[in-house]
Image 1: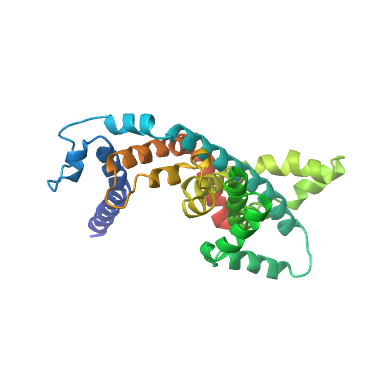
Image 2 (image 1 turned 90 degrees about the vertical axis):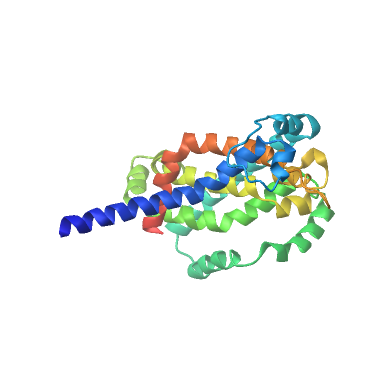
Length: 278
């Protein structure tokens, strides 16, 4: 009886896992096969679960008829810049929140959480007015600043939870051995919490890589458009070029997949540590 019950639970878990994988992978599969179909096969009402006429014309059009290389370069610059600056600020802020006691510390944490509940669209108009006066409209630097501000609250709280899991005794031992406060942080603490740092960088990078609304609002020149904005140009009033759009989406996935393949071990470890202490 017990053996049958365990077998049933195992089968149920496998079925749930397979269902979950199908739900996750099916959109990516459909994205890819759409990108390698001719236009007529995409628009036909006869559903093709595998392309009858396999073609890479959509990828050729993407690279020859649009500025996709420029969009890709801008996305890489903005995402890496956002990830690096956000991580640096989150390290400094998270360290202060974890190691120092000051008035209204609890209120500051609640304030950071509260900012995550404010819809970003509410602050776009005043931010656009401010950026237009200081010359940051239609500028990659302005876009990076917007993304840093948007990511800092969550990343700071995330980094604080990583600092909390590092014993203070390690820093005190380093201070006794002659390290400065900054030296103890760089030489002792940061190497230990490397998975958390990588997880924070990846979170900020992906947030900037996929963001569309702010990019449309603050960038108008083709020279500074990122991939999401560039792909949105294929949506016209009476027509959508699904083949080229999906080809661009597939190409946009490549850098993210490569990065995850390199740092996935650190990300999983960092997020699990943050979940335990957070």
